[in-house]
Image (cartoon, rainbow, N blue to C red; front, side, top):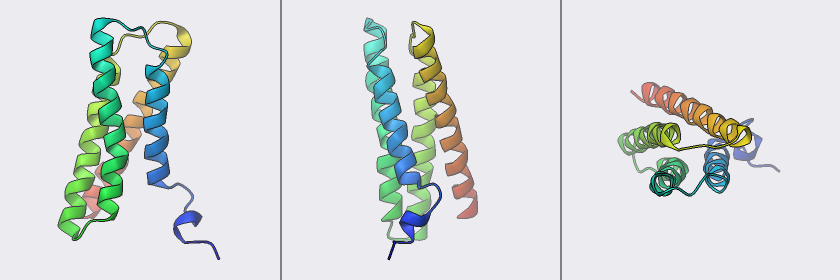
Length: 120
């Protein structure tokens, strides 16, 4: 018998994990300038934090705790989008990857924003 969780068409834990991995893959092809190195550290932290906080939200002890953690997910996705917009990119492939990550951060922000609204 399959768990209900595995039958979901799109699992947010898996999606946030893929987002963090996508960001890490992008960072690995970016130019290692002084500014980029600092920005890359920030974007790796914030993109990984989206999924980590979502896992915490799923283990929340109360509805209020859940809502707070989902708000943190939204905040970290927004921060990731910010850092991704600042990072220096060279080459068409890297720019496509960056734009894909920005789009995913934006989508995650919207998803978490919608969840926040539904918990009110």
